[in-house]
Length: 261
Ligand SMILES: *[C@@H]1O[C@H](CO)[C@@H](O)[C@H](O)[C@H]1NC(C)=O
Ligand SMILES: *[C@@H]1O[C@H](CO)[C@@H](O)[C@H](O)[C@H]1NC(C)=O
Ligand SMILES: [Cu+2]
Image (cartoon, rainbow, N blue to C red; front, side, top):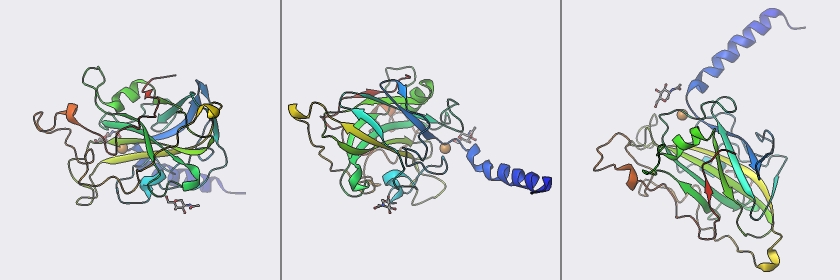
């Protein structure tokens, strides 16, 4: 039997280890299909990172599916036309979701699972960053208001297994390049969900994903959306002119929104 001292020490150690998570990062807790929650997905159907820390090196393989890109036991079942909702959290479910300071974009990509996310296999399905016409202008602010939730509609793609990759780009330190100062740089919160798409309309002609985007690969310091100054002059850094990293959303995508189920 372990002594009470052991438990005291273990608790002290644990609380010590927990200190870095006071930083205001974010992770996906689970997904919803047509407004039905699919259960805690962490390490079950999400290739979850062990902490809520961001990826900052845009040239690292961690850009693919964060630091634990290996198959997890389950897969979420969806059909073409279904609504797939991601649910983010900060430290515990339905909390403040992400630090107020972490303003930026939310995007969703898809790739066939068989690729493991490697190569020019990704297609963008959703992108939302700044909308000056709304009260909560940045996508991340609206995500907080929506209790961490945003959805996409499953496009008319062939039946198969896919990785749905949700990405938050937080810009609060993006005025400095990470490769020039490792304390700074844009922060990427990346979560890959294993999804099996059943296309009942396949006979009507499903559309192959074009791919073309590599993660890592497509993002660079020469491309838009990686370097940004949230605190710079409005003339030079008008947020309405912010374009998030990566290509335009694929025309075969069926849309989505930052909205609570
Ligand atoms: C939120 O982020 C800022 C940095 O942008 C940091 O100074 C602050 O401590 C964070 N707040 C919490 C509650 O972690
Ligand atoms: C999948 O890719 C990751 C890098 O993102 C790599 O570490 C892992 O070994 C790959 N797994 C397989 C089965 O190829
Ligand atoms: Cu953070």
